[in-house]
Length: 307
Image (cartoon, rainbow, N blue to C red):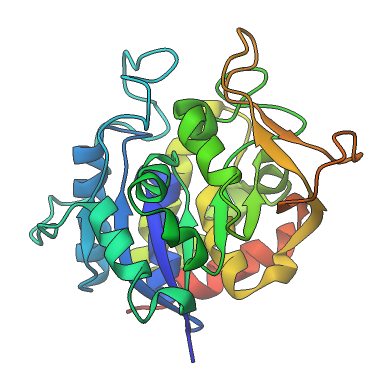
């Protein structure tokens, strides 16, 4: 039986590749996508998500979630222009399909409190605002989610500040609620996603496959590589999604993890207690390395398929 997943996304370019992998992976069943404010405003995230599913010719329910962080009125530093790695909208035709009428938070609560909840992994690959709000509104949900596989955080470095990765920085209070919830977690930070990076030669291998998914993914990777100008890109969210079906993609350590919400220089930093300094019981399996060749081979296999 395929492994059921719900993807909570802030769809820019790497979320788009994760969505395509979720649809095309033979061992995964994508139940729904929920969107959250992050890489782009939530209305753009929803439109981008629908564009991806239209490209693949599939119907997956899309629920729009929170337009702002869990507690804060905005990011720690408000967005002033689009991130060049994502732009405002994906370079795909405008969506013809429509989002669901129900709010994403209400959907998550209803789904996980229902009969299929305990068999469905939640994969948040954007800010954790929707997750935190669902926990606040229905605390019993923490007993119903069998596992969260979170893309977020960094141990050795950040990408939006020297200390913080974007997803956690964008809503540190929401992230802290999720991290300390007691829900079983695997966390896939920048350490693992950059270890599994995709370079320009691998992007050309994707493009050569010629399928709609592979051609679109190659274009998204081109944009990401050009924005950073380092000859490679980390496809962060796709790695987290693919690890649901194949945990061997990651090298994990069982540690206690928490999130800094106040530091002037460190707000949004994920603190992974890799040396057991806190004396607290481990609450997550954090990936500090990943199998690059295996991940890129899997991307070629998945994105070379059609739905």
